[in-house]
Image (cartoon, rainbow, N blue to C red):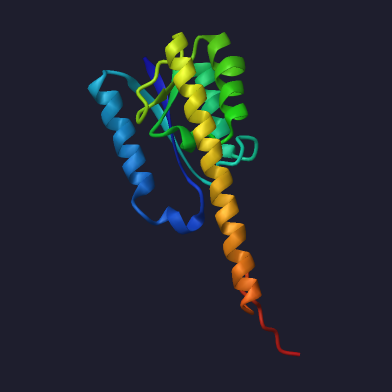
Length: 160
């Protein structure tokens, strides 16, 4: 099987940690272990909120459509954190073209009813996690603001 790899971290602050390299290394090891051809690996730094504003993801999907049998990622939340986006990707994009979504942490085959059910449940969990992260962030910002701090980035001082 010919697969396109996709690695993502959410923010530029995470770009320098080992996560991207770890994701890439594990995708490469998986493809080698199961004798899959890894066509290319796309690496992206950006939010997992949706797939629309991720140029590297879109390039990966274009390559899947034209030259590969599927896309492989370490975890579902690297692809998307929206249940709706995951299901649209699988049901409307990949399955009609007989393409695969391979998620190393779930070991799920989306071509079976059980695999699709597990993917649906895990997509809902990823969406819940995103909502909880947002809720905690907003709560922290509110507390910081109430305590006199600046809660939205850093202040820029300019001289007049």
